[in-house]
Length: 212
Image (cartoon, rainbow, N blue to C red; front, side, top):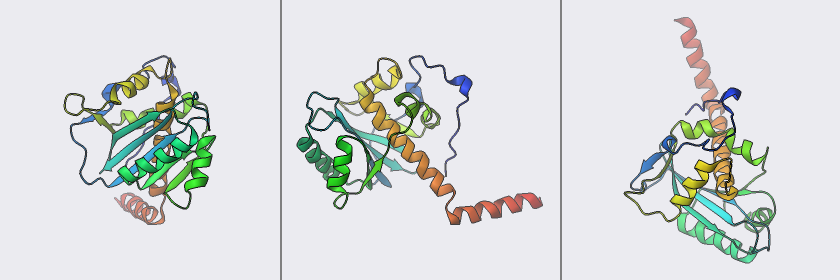
């Protein structure tokens, strides 16, 4: 189980380039048989074609490393959004689909709750802090992006630009989808650490160390 570091308040100088590209690992090929597949959806406003784009980021896990396998970004009215959610589900067969529980995302959750493995995520804090609190997870080297010299990804350049621009002059859709995934990952890790079986193990280890 990975221990997530924390960031000191003195480090929170909100200029640009808060996220360093060198924090990301790079892959030349995706795992054939990932241990886990997670999709994170940040959806645009319902039935407004001129609203912000909807973004779905698909992550593969192999061991402790998470590979950003695909990013879909598109302005869609609700019927197209609903259809695209199903299409990307069928393509990647995710173990869980994270959906921001507001606007069109709430409707997606209602329409697919008994059909797909969807989980609603209620946004907390403001957009900057949603990502800021998870920067240590990226810096810890848990996320891998495509190596542009080895694998073609038409979404990679824009994703990197938005990461580098955070929190200034950024298009928030990809950032919000990413921070939502990171929040789920941190919650998942905490739940695993405090699961009953792990707590027994931690107690035993603590008692053993106390007798040395």
